[in-house]
Image 1: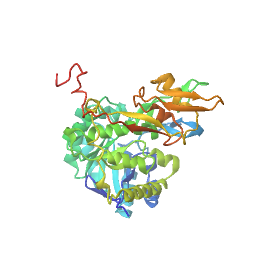
Image 2: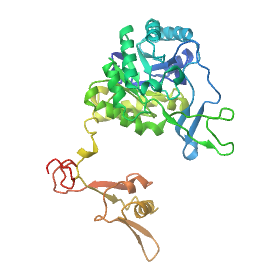
Image 3: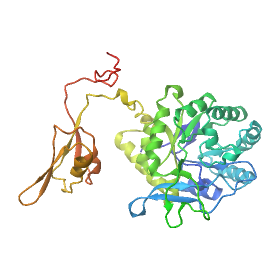
Length: 424
């Protein structure tokens, strides 16, 4: 059976599945239940200075798919609303009782060196394995100069990271905001400040929906609302891209990454790990389905690794990074053409409609004298865009078949059609 244990930035854990800093990790009761369920680690809900913040009601909203499936989740909840002393006491006890699990403490304090100097020894005394600096929360009390208000300023990221390395011997993980143009810039700042790792992504600024009767965005607080932090499966593509950007950036080469954003099953986790993450953090899936989902995640990842011959996570972690590049380096001579498996086709016509109305008119609709329909790809017209395959409701009915062009690899910087081609 595959070994799921990880060593992330010097932090040992029995598996890569960690609960992210969020409501599921806000107290000992929750964290103990999570460990009992099998989670390899937790990031304790963000601690701050006393007096603790005051949350509002309500706090959550969602973006729904068919049958009320939650695609995206939105929250306007702040950091812990319990005292610093109580949280530290509970962290100490839980870590004592569960020494084999990763215990990371999330922190959000003002941009004042004395504040960090004061709290870091208290956190270290709990026996925690590391700290995570919350520089990403989009509603992270910016009036106190915290959260994304820090994460969007690289100089602040580097400065506070340096303070943490100065006043603590614990591994420092910097949690990055996605609400920025280029996520590599704060990652480089964290690296320059001595960060042992980064985690990403934090939540994305969002409004999920509007109550058209009251004309108020959700979640509704009295007669008003505000933007919140968007998470859940909908943000996974954004998170994967940002993880990959940092993983392949020469300026942050070797910087460990904890992947966050839409991890709902073992396959999601494997994708983050393949793009360079060393652990994954989960929040929304646990909130929607409970802590027991980690068993399915562990089982699925282990079975897949056994099937592929991977004995440990390090055998495949980061293997997709080298195959991720900039558009200009893609092979301009590579060509695929759609092929319809007529035995699997249910003649719904969705591929034809999509291609005819919005793409390249490369699928023919053939109607017999009896009125039956058949769909065939016009090979000479097909550009291999994949739209037909995406719209087809039958798995493996439409495949994209590579074509032998007889032409060598040529990227856009070499293409004679490029007015700025390097070989001109």
